[in-house]
Amino acid sequence: MRLPSLLLLSVGVLSGLTACQPSVTHKNLPSGPAPSLTGSGSAPLLRLVGSNSIGNTLAPALAKAYMEKRLGATRVVVSEDPARHSRRIEGFLQGEAGARHIEVVATGSGFAFTALEQGKADIGMSSRSITAEEIGRLASLGNLSDPNCEHVLGLDGLAVIVHPENPVSKLTVEQLARIYSGSAGNWGEVGGPTLPIHRYARNRESGTFGSFMDLVLGRMGDMAGDTRYVVDSRELSAAVAGDRGAIGFVALPFVGQDRAVGIASYNPMPIPPTIINVAREAYPLTRRLYLYTPEHPANPAVAEFVQFALSPEGQAIVDRLGFVGQSVEPVMPEQFLGQLPANTPTAYRQLAQTALVVPVTIRFKPHSAELDNKATRDIGRLAQWLDASRYRGHAVTLAAFGNSPDGLYAAPDEATAGAAAVKAELIRHGIGAVSILDLGGALPLAPEESAWAREKNRRVEIWVSR
Image (cartoon, rainbow, N blue to C red; front, side, top):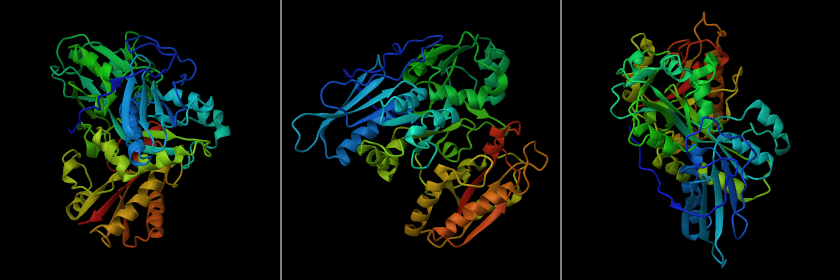
């Protein structure tokens, strides 16, 4: 798996979050008010608050490139105050004597929405989607679930990490849930050595923690009482590397010296957190990374920064730092076909012999055939790319997946209805040769036990003839 080295940041002096303590392990961390952004000198060009996964390296790298390539800034440096999980990206703009800066405070996704609400952030960074309660609370800023406010920056896989000498190479989601709920306390219970399990987790305010709870623990309740909570992803990775009995979970770029194990969900074969598996959202612990902005931001730099982050130039930075950018360049299906179960439909295997798969998966708004915000942008990206590539005029096949006919949340023709909406959107963008392969409930990604699982299974893959 490709895991680039991390961007190294020098220590700086930016004032940051007062509600959180330095990055040491805590059982519980305070969930107080949004961070204080009171940097010295001139007012910041932009203030980004929220997700540590985004704000640790990715947001500073994007901010630095934005200042250099969009604003023409020179002598741009990134400094860090590790005690407050804050970064200051500072440079000199043409015609200005003093330095200007962008502030990034990275303590957890929950703080993104509090900071937006209190007017202490221009952009909220989140590694989970906004909740209904948060949408209501921030209604004065517009509908933050609208495409004008919710921007998918890229994808990430929650890597489950163990000490490099731990022989366990795969776990099921059910085993993970048993470990973190406390019902499994020894590695010998999950195929490993006779050694007590030491659980490490990100802090409760982080989107990483929230995503793990949603994707793994579900209805099993809270984490075991002896779980060790860590604010910073790099420090969590280092803690696991120094503890033979440890297990933790981090964003892909923070695996460090640890080993990421394969995860099996409904598919009995473990799926590793590779770039292609995360891009297709097939890895069981895949999540999206978001930027949230007011519908009508008072700061004109907000729209320009988001546009840069979503551009090919910005997405290249997402890729370079070990996350997964939103490329639509088709790939050889051989990269993942070996992970498919024996009961994979023949029609799907035949499709793989004649076509390439686009590394995006089209998804929909809950209980609807309407494309979600990411899908809408992905269709536009795909149409633009096809028109300018050697695949212009090639046939496009939509592989549509729904739920099994006897599933708890089955809906007749659900997959076909979603695929029809995708086909209509492709045709609207000038792509004519589009067909639908209805695969029904084949290759489910999650057991049909909840509405979440139903939406996880309902998807459309895009294939382009070779």
